[in-house]
Image 1 (cartoon, rainbow, N blue to C red):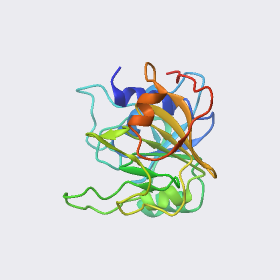
Image 2 (image 1 turned 90 degrees about the vertical axis):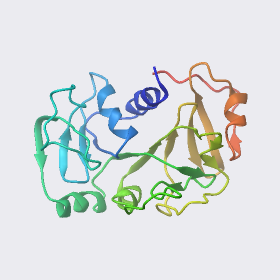
Image 3 (image 1 turned 180 degrees about the vertical axis):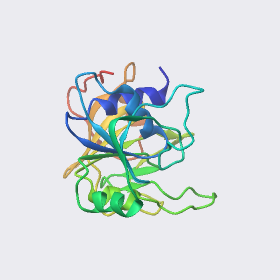
Image 4 (image 1 turned 180 degrees about the horizontal axis):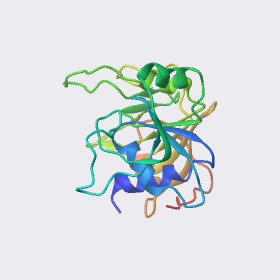
Length: 216
């Protein structure tokens, strides 16, 4: 199991039956591949879809079925397409139960930076600002490190996506929950020691006496 699959599988366990869930571009789209059989959710994409299914098998792609990142998707029975105005009315109206987004940095205040990559062309923040502000629960799915640099930082140096703090961070090393007291270490990835997480994290973490291993 690679790091991205590990993250996607763990995020999938956060989804509740009957939820309307937005999946951001990139890694978050993988979450749709690992939904438990007893959980029924509907996936939203901000380009105007409710009812995304798993990634299509190679050779079965349909050029007319794509997500907001232009990646190929499938539809589930009952899926519906609509325009961007309706899509953002759903987001801004507070109708999304959960959004799963990638991240570049999350800081000790639980604030997210995820739309500007230094030295690269900036396409704009897309729907990220609206999603972090409007969804009932915000989960960040990202690798713990960018090269050798921690993505869990004391203070974001990249432009913030929103002033609202996120609700949960899932990386390939840990599950971390932003709280009023700070960043709480909730789980560690299989085979990863607490000391490894602390070494790879710039931000200060609150470490309980017992940190269970995440189940994926």
